Image (cartoon, rainbow, N blue to C red; front, side, top):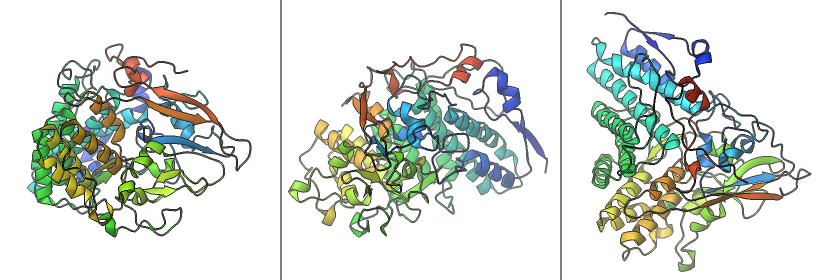
Length: 518
């Protein structure tokens, strides 16, 4: 067979001019078979595991976008003792500016700025995937099934990275404005393009995401993968249902969800779940486990366990579940209706009664990852929301299918009389409870704000604390910061990396400047 030699330019447009040749010179890759391409796919297409999984870090070999979990209304800062807030392995040190929606989010408490590694890493992945997509069909000596599988996986992953990029660095999709709203640069070629790069419209990015996922579904049809760490058709349909949900394509959401349910969309009945005593160190089941019947696909790493470290009772900087989030699980208890997720998803602080950490997976040994996760619970929520938006009464039955597995003894809140805005609000609240700390809430708040039928905005208040003076001190209150509702505050979108703006010589336009919060 003809030997194919090609070059992968890791990040075609995410470095400044000065370090481009030094840091991202040509990475020479030889591929003589689909097996070689498969190795490139595993090593460079899929998200990498962090090199330091037992403690928090942020860098090009660390956790992906950990800040996604600290910007919304489900979290609160939690300092104990005389915590060292200058140590980079303490999450608050690195993530404080994201938590308070600062003008310069990529800056530690010390004032030291650091690189936006997520833009860089995701475009690196895309560069490799572009090459795989371009060349896989040329390996005619390999089986057609293998070629289709590799192509489908690469198309899915490229769509997934563009989905994350456009939702982190651009305004949410709105049909009325998507063609005129700046998204992120689309690069689909396996070769380096001349000239500077600009931002493609949000609509164009979403169209490409849909195209890649539609193609991935075709190429992955009938393919059986050995683990939840490799993409299959069901995962591709699940992500496409989410994309259509963000686009407000309600019937298409329903169509994809119905296909997934026909393929098999099992739910874990939490009536049979053992949360132990919901205290630190107890023997218990973990909801996000690779053995769960709910998991379609996952990649990356589990950072939430490290953000909510319950191990050290003395000096520590970390986060806990907000009182607002934890409180909504008790909403129906006065009526004798118990939400099992309250104990299955959370663990009480072993230091301070009344404070709770999310514990969907083990703190250090996660096998299902919050960086990127697709599972069956989301499918029922996606379908129900789309049905409710179309005023279809079956939305209630869809919600009951999920809720029957989430409430004690299958005794559910009464929702039969709900419709319109009330039903949508109920579904949104159930979505918040079901998918907390799986990377949804920040994006959901943004898309609710531009919903054409039932728009919903809110301000978010975050509190920060000062270290105490001794190991067992309770950290004293420092001050509060407020993120104004979407449309009134520019901090609902991350800034484009500075080196990207410099390298592209003004052709790449930044997002509107954030305010300096006082």
